[in-house]
Image (cartoon, rainbow, N blue to C red; front, side, top):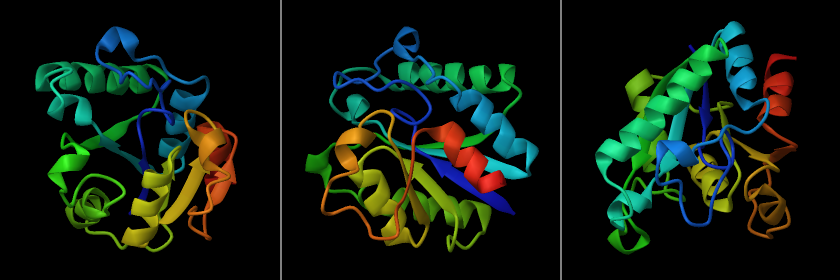
Length: 177
């Protein structure tokens, strides 16, 4: 099975320092939905792994998170793509859980659920925590320069194996090329 793991905010949709708190605030990054469709066409399952501490902070509830994710899934479908699953962590940093990125728990859970080895599996993110989680889980960290990516690219803690791309469309071209 071929799988690609994507962060949500800053990779698929526009990010916000104030969190994406409603379906109306969820806006796709140009080309991201088509990139998901391209990955699907090449036989990849697309799985989202996203920190959503806004729930843990009380900024929005689970029904709202589900509505935001449903909007994303429907938008991908309208572009001819499919998101197979959305894994999320609603904990805050203070909870010190094993699933919140940069910890690898959520990515390891995806590997267990899909019964795949993470060696060589693309894990795409825009923040250092996405890439650290990917590297810790044994996946291939890929940084996009959308979202927080332009700030992240110069971070000295960036995993050495990280591949850098302008956006998700460029990642899809690389993976399928």
